[in-house]
Image 1: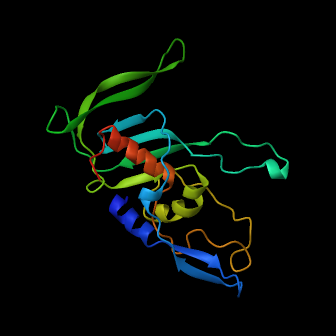
Image 2: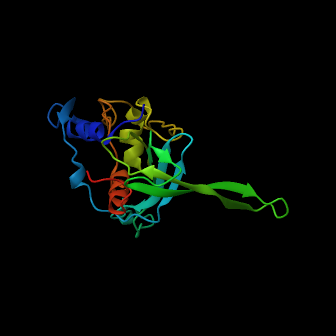
Image 3: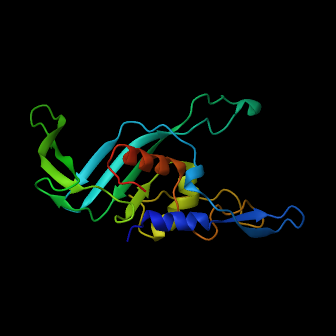
Length: 215
């Protein structure tokens, strides 16, 4: 079952990091709370919304830009990255109420189908109809997530997959270094649930646009 924001926030506040002790060189676990309100404010591009009354979901996708280039490569002699990267980010709300007609605090959603033109072979979007869904709530509706940044992949994707809260098939990850204590520490040794800054900023954008209620 997908997860609710309350559970994500709770896990992030109780986040445990694995670090190497400078004196003993051994790995140890340290509580390092992650607070969503301390995430940076990021630019969110054009929103794409897909309403699916049949499975009671509403899905939002946008490109979210990081606040700065992730790596300054000048010192290594490689090409310097001068612009912030963009990551396609997705949030899906589950068990959403849909109706054929408007109701209190409802939001209009157009439903489209992809239809292939028999003559030209061109695929066009054709309007199937208009439905209305309830205003989404992070307290009421569980969510599943998808992010393409390295933080989402290495820290959050595995525990979210275990909670059935990842959209699509998680990417295969091949560790390049030996496991601790020889190699690098695990990013999320206790498999806490959470979200990257791109997912969080997309959620804030949905609240700003009135798609999601206050939280």
